[in-house]
Amino acid sequence: MPGIDDCLAEAMGVPGALGASLVDWTSGLALGTAGAGPGGDHEAGAADATELARAVTQSTSFTDPAAGTAPAEDLILSTGAAYHLVRFLETDFDSSLILYLRLDRERANLAMARLRLAAIAEQLVLD
Amino acid sequence: MIVTLPAPAPPAAPAPALRLPRRRRSGRSPAGPVEAALADLAAARATGTLYASAGALHLADGAVVDADSPAAPGVEALLTGCGRLTGPQWAAQLAACAGTGRTLAEQLVGAGHVSFGELQLCQLTAVLDAAYVVLSRPEGDGGEPSFVPGSAPLLTLDRPMSVRELRVAVGRRRALLDRVWPSPQLDAVAVRRRPGTVPRGCTRRRQAVLEAADGHRTPTEIALLLGRSAYGTVLDVRHLAARGLVEPGGLTAAPPALPPRSAAPPGSAAPPAYDPSDPHVALLLRIRAGLEARL
View 1 (tube, rainbow over the protein chains, first blue to last red):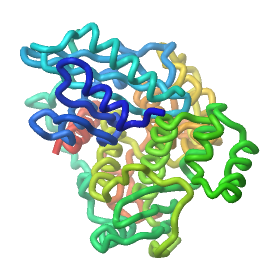
View 2 (spheres, rainbow over the protein chains, first blue to last red):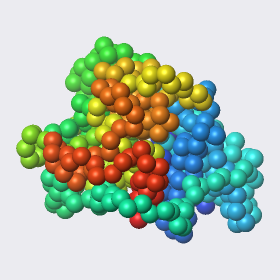
View 3 (cartoon, each protein chain N blue to C red):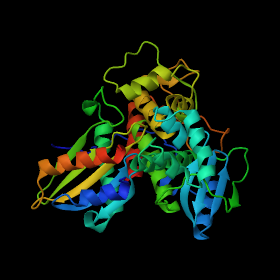
View 4 (tube, helix red, strand yellow):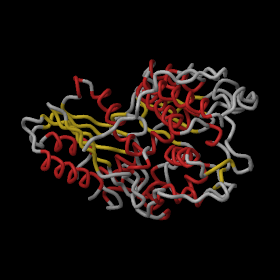
C-alpha cells in the first residue's frame, strides 16, 4: 500500500523528473522529498511552489465555486529549461497539500507527466 | 498556462503620517515560553510531551512526532468529520489495539478504514494544525508550559518534524493570514455574516463557513463543527473578512479594529493608533505582511 515516500519515488520515475516533493501550501513546509530540489534546495523550492499555489487560492478570478477540498486541479509553469507541475491533493478530510514535480524540459513530455502526476496524487489518497 | 505571482509592493506608496505598530516577524518572533521550552527540548534531544495552555506537543529525540489541541481537530475528528469512520468505530479500533498489540495506525489501515497514504496525510495535517494553535496562542493564566518525559502518543509521524521547520512553518502560516486580511482580532471572537451582504463567487468551502458564522461561534468552533482544520477555517474567515462578508459577532460598526498583535500581553491591548479603514493604512499593512512573508 503506497505511502508518501512511495508516491514521491513513483513521481521520480516520470521521464525527465528532477525532483518531487509533498508540500503544505499554507506553510510552505516540505513534508516529503525525492530527487533534487531547485538549486539543490527542496526547502526553498517548497516555499516557492507554495507561492504559485497561493496565487490560485487567493485570487477570486481563479476561484471555482464548485471546488471541493482542492481549490484547483493543477498548475503548469514552463521555463526554457524546465517544467514545474503543481498538483493540488483532493482529500476527503480538510487539508492544504500539493505535489510539486520539477522536470527537465528536454526529456519530459508535459502531457504525459501531467497525467502521471494526477494518477499518483489519486493513488496517494485512495486505497 | 501563465501564472502571475502576487505583484511586488508598489515602489512609491503614499506615506500618510501614521505610525504602524512595530511587530517582529512571526517566524522569528522572540520565543514565548512554549517556543523557548521547545527549543531547549530540541537541543537536549528530549523524548516526552510538552503541555502548554492551548495543547500539547509530543517529541521523540528532540523532533515533533505528534501534536494535539482541544482547539484543533485531530486525526479522529478529521476522519469522522468526513465520514470515513464513525466515533464508535474509532473507539473499537482503539480497543482492538490493546488486544492485538498492533499500533493504532496499523489497526486503522488493516481494518480498511483509511489507506496508508491517506492516514499519513491526515496525521501531518492534524499535527501542523495543532502545532499552529499551540505556538500561536499566548500563554494565558495557565502558567509555564510543563514537560513530561517519556510519554508516547498513540499515533506518531513516520517522518518527525524538526522544531526549527515547525517554527518556520507556523511563522509562514501567520504571515499568510496577515497577507489575506491583517486583522488577528477575528481569529478568536464569534463572527457573523455581515447583514445585507450577498456572497458571490464563494467556494462551497467558504460558503459553509459563512453559513456557520451565526454570531455565536468563533472560528475554532466553526472548524470543530465542520470537522475542518482550525487554521484553514481561520484563513477562510480572513478571506471572507477581506471581502467584507463577515464581521465580529458583537459589533455592528464596519471595519474591525486592528489590535497590535503580540505587542502587548493579552488583556491589555492598547487601542490602535491608526484608522484601519483608511485605504493607505490597509495598503501599508498588506505591504508589511508581504515583506514579512519574504524576509
